[in-house]
Length: 311
Image 1 (cartoon, helix red, strand yellow):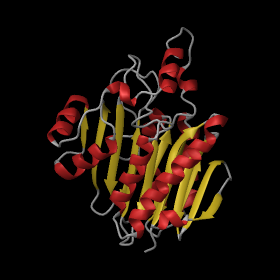
Image 2: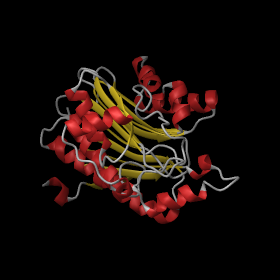
Image 3: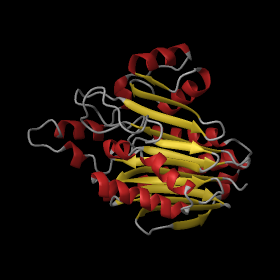
Image 4: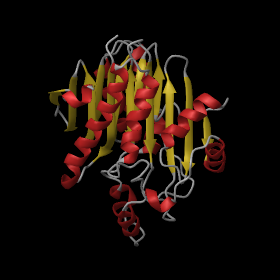
């Protein structure tokens, strides 16, 4: 099987001045994951490390760069899933963790559970030797200013959410195993303890070797109402091609609950797509030594994988 990895940096409306930063970020993440796959690494590790790159990039709403809740704190969600045996790990409402996706993987591999939240996730992180970082270290000036703006009477946090997207990755490795990973800081000025779609299996992501792997982004409550990840994979099980299934799922969410978002998807045959119903979504994919990237509908830049990335 030829390895494939696809990543996204969130669906919404990206401010022009940040476009190149978003392109650069998703490209770097995709190349990081692809290098692991090329060297014979597994899909789970590839998607985890791709998401780590985006969690560490302050432009993206995950890890360092996460938006703030109504009290001005960072609370993050993440999920990872192995399509080989359907094992999954997730965390929600975690604070002071630089890379929630790493903690989600430990939940998957070191516990009998699938989701740990808040205090329990924090205690587990300490037990696993994951260091806490000061909460302020995860907050950017951009996130702080956005939070302040949405404290004013008459503000619209939902509209202000545009351009702030969950990050994610999907991959298939040389053994034919698929995996997904998704991570987010959630919705700006959200209620304390709010958990969106990301940490919910079948909504924020899903992976099954018999069908494929998917990661979603967009309005979390809408995604949860239609369990978007599971819905699209169900369409594929019914025989829909990868791209058509992604479009059908997004169209159903728009029609049924007036929700917008985006998805990245790779099938068990290695077919992949990146689709969105918002104005933009930053995404990148690597397969056959070719790097694909886009932000706008219909845009697909294709270049050869840089020599430095092949080492």
